[in-house]
Amino acid sequence: MKRKIIVTGGCGYIGSHTVIALIQNNFEVIILDDLSNSSKETIERIYKITDVKPKLVIVDLKNDFETKRIFEIHKDAIGVIHFAAHKAVGESIEKPLVYYKNNLCSLLNVLEAQNQFGIKNFIFSSSATVYGLPKKLPITEANKTQRPFSSYGNTKKIAEEILDDFTKSKSDFSAISLRYFNPIGAHESGLIGELPNGIPNNLMPYITQTAIGIREKLMVYGNDYPTRDGTAIRDYIHVEDLAQAHVIAMQRLINNENKTVLEFFNLGTGNGYSVLDIINSFEKISETKLNYEVTDRRAGDVPELYAEVELANKTLGWSAQKDLNEMISSSWKWEQNFRKKINKVLDFSIKKTQD
Ligand code: NAD
Ligand code: UD1
Image (cartoon, rainbow, N blue to C red; front, top):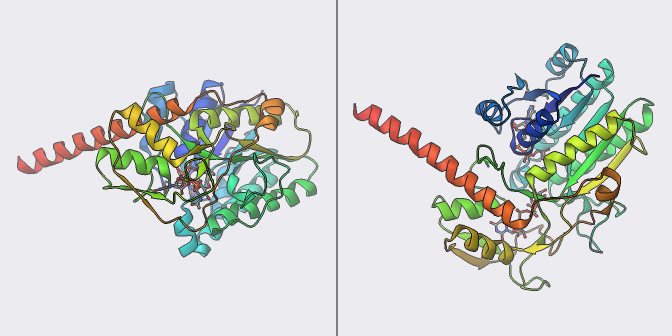
């Protein structure tokens, strides 16, 4: 049986965890990544964890000629998991064209290449952002999607519409769109984790960077929401649980178990935690006091968002296994390990200059 999977964006945060899970489930992985938000070192780290070095092809998927050339070499692949995208919400509002071009041209090039070489299974990284401001909680997949606040979010909504049209037009192509809620955490080894470019937008990396002393203070965006403690509520999900869901979804497509040519699944735990819940748990786990201050709400934030996960539970047979403590402790372990490593490199280069 063919077991080769192409993973675009496989050097990134969620992609690298998924590559590990695929390898551990005996898939052969080919990573396509332009390293615009990741580094080659991820391959060494995956090797340390799995004893397998996945093949990395450095390619910008906006380039249709190069994308097709590489797909032709790997046309024996049985499926594609498409993570490659830009993901910074704030930046996408400042540079919408960059986001539409990268996220949508890459998607179109990958689909065209799959179409040309007959690779018929496709998993897409979507986001809970496609639900916009929900009228009812928890959110089920049957909820109507709305135009998201940011251009980044809108690339996800448009991508799902492209997939809808494309899967309808083809009899031998199936896709699953996985709508992630709030991915946090890191691999249990502490060897890979999230590495945001510049100042983090997201809560968890901002907390760990503040605790380690890179950021001065965490700003809590609003404590006047209609929630139990006034701060906004989200459904945080461990990145290793997300990774497992991708393996299961790909197996579902390979085994032709999908009910329709395009399926959507929420990936969350179904539990909502407030910003203060996260801060309090972090302080307990890390035994550190976090410097934080409440400020105004952030534009575009919704008060409360958590998933109904029954469909993924029943249909995929998947459910999140890791709780909030494991999410937070693994994020913290990763941050500490990573900074230790950076400091070692810095010490070494300072010594070198002094020599
Ligand atoms: P990431 O930035 O860590 O990984 C994305 C990877 O794609 C990077 O390695 C980057 O170098 C690569 N890439 C970007 N543009 C490319 C291009 N044109 N050609 C080739 N490679 C390219 O992001 P992540 O957090 O791992 O997210 C993975 C996917 O999940 C993205 O599609 C993202 O939008 C989606 N998603 C992420 C979150 C989250 O909170 N992290 C939430 C919902 C959805
Ligand atoms: C954000 C994006 C969403 C994207 C997701 C994953 C926005 C409006 N939404 O979701 O489109 O899919 O990330 O990348 O950016 N918070 C603080 N202080 C901070 C950072 C965050 O209080 O410094 C709060 C936020 O107000 C929110 C919660 O923490 O209530 C989680 O924020 P974040 O991690 O940025 O995720 P989302 O906003 O849910």
